[in-house]
Length: 335
Image (cartoon, rainbow, N blue to C red):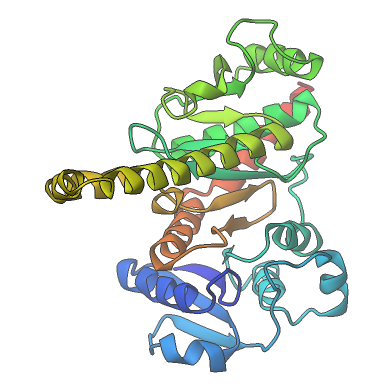
C-alpha cells in the first residue's frame, strides 16, 4: 500500500478542492492510503468516510502570501504542511502533496525531509503542456538561481529517471534552454553546462533549445537555471491565458462567431485542456529524500487529484532510490 500525506489547507481555494481531489484519488486508486492534515471543521462539509482515509486535525496552516516560511517553521510545527512533511520524515507516509506556498514547501523539505546526499541542489520540476499532449519536464523553475554546471547534470539524470520510469519515455532527451541552437551559444555557464551534458553517458543530450520551440520540441526534459526556467514557465502560463482571452473576445465579436463556436465546442474544450498544466500533474521538488509534490496554488479538484496521482506514480517507480544509486555510482567513479 502506498501511503501519502496530504496538506488539506494549502492552496488558493483550500480546503474544498484538496478534500475532493483526495477523495477522487482514493476512489480511483485502490493501492493508496491517505492521511489528510488540516482544520477538520473547515474540511467537514466536503469530507466523506473512507476506509483508506485518515484525518489529522490542526487549526494552523500557512497563508499563500507567507513571507517568512523559515520563521513559521521555527515557531509553529503544527502547521498543516509541516505536519504532513513530518509524517513522511517519521516513516508513516511515502510522499507528501501540497498546494501551499512553494518556498514554504522548499523550506520544509530542507529542514524536515532533508536533501539527498547525492544531490547538491534542489529543483522545482513541473510537467508543462506540449503539442503532443504528453507533457515535458521543466527544471529548475524557481528553487535556485545560482547553479554550477554539475548541478544541472544531476537534475538531468534525475529527470531522465523520472521520464523513463513515471512518464514511460523511451530514451528521453534532455535539452538545454538557450538563446540559440548552435554549440557555443549563451553565457559562459551555458557553454560549460552544454559541454558537461554532451559528455555525459547517463543522459541522452538533445542539444540547445530556443524558447520558441518549448511547446513543439521532441525533447522530454527542458533544463536551465531557476531564473531562466521560471521566466519560461510564467511566459507559457501568461501566453495560454492570453490566448484564451483573445479566443473568447473573437467568439463574442459576432453572432456568426458565436454560432460557429457551438459547432466547435468539443474542439475548444480540447484546446483548453491541451494548455492546462493541471491536467498533467504538479511540480516535483526534485532532490529530497522522499517524494514531495507541489500542486498548483490555484488547483481545483482535478488538478489536485493529478498531483496525488503523480506522487503515487513516483513512489511506485521507486525513482528516488534509482537516482541515488546512479549518482552514488558516479561519485565513486569520480565523475
